[in-house]
Image (tube, rainbow over all chains, first blue to last red; front, side, top):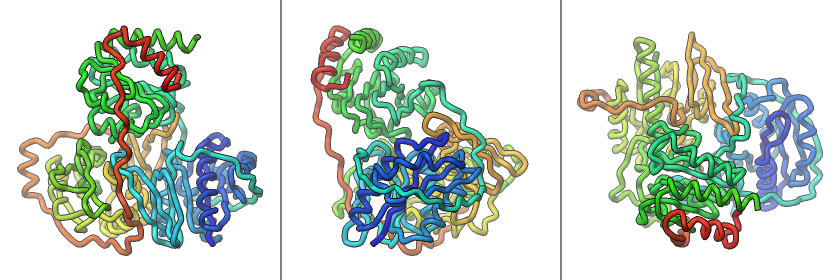
Length: 324
Length: 250
């Protein structure tokens, strides 16, 4: 019997949505392993309030580690605290959400505990005494099954892959010592522009490519995104490399992998590395002047023609549809 | 300033991947290999830091098969001084095993900075850098998009969801590079010629026990072919109708 430790993530004292996902994923794994789920909440004094509801998504215990330095992400302190908890218990797996923070944290925990690691997984199973994780590699061009053959393994779980359900568990609060260790210090978090959505998190992504002919025409993309409401602006590698758009917006193998409800590709031909980053979107719309562009092979709906005529019309019609 | 850059040989991002007969590896027939794109930013950063410091050494370290010598040569052509190949016929799927071999190589090197690309575009682990830092007990900031170094201290910025973290650390440190940290230079012909004469040491990679193994690879399900709704702006109303009535995403 081995237990599962879910390391949660808070910002400003509130747990992030991915924290519920990681606890829920830990619940499924612990049930397969015949163990219990401990959720670790790290933060400043008073963060225990944030952890109180984790029983509802599957935590048997909620371990709260408070430290003055834990307001922001404190990698060295988080690692030392998680490692101390794991060494003091009987754990078979440590789960972390594969967020910007989790992608930084999970490898450190794995190295500190000498445990094998699987990152950014979309599923994890336990059979025959081994963990097997499913993870997209080559930006999703290939799906890998990897087995972790050790008494303890560390796994980071891709956000938005576990649909969180209800699990009435005790979620009993307990305190653990927050270990203060700081080789690096997060001095501040500069917030992004108000209301700006990250391409990796938005439910609608409108992306532009070289077909826009110049950075000034991205206003077309921004306006279409605005018409959809909660939409993020994305970009192809070509326009990011040309300096038209920031790298944070790049979708594809050397950018972000996105799985929105709706992906609108405007003036993007559909290079393999771009398709790899967006083809798990639920619905894909492509607008391109070349009817043979590869983007049309993955698009559910396509319009062939001049984007400078089509996009303003589409923006108008979407705004109308949203208003109606 | 003495800087190590850990680099990797990976398939070109434009590669259409095929799975080999063993079911657990890539069919490398006809596949073009390149220096991992994120590692180019790490190499460039190292070169700029050395130039700014007015001296020092940039050492590139690659773990992989003999063919990774070509990858090392690409970094040498950009301007790195020498290379080390930690030879492993196959790069294991165990990121910690790789990190241990790299840490063993870097441990007594006296490096002020150890740089990595944010991740390799093949296995997507995004783990070797922070693991090496943990094994060596060094400060580490991952996926940095901005870096300032002064008097043995550094400030780096990294993108997080909805913002940017500003992180302080002291040297020596391990940093991993996000795209956009700088603009990597193209090797000039002179650099390519010079790279042929630069030394590459080769020794076996001290991988230790490999505990993460690929059990299977599969291609993701293909998307069903869609349809062209129409041509030009007149097709827009029909598209909007389909998005609402059929796809139900409006």
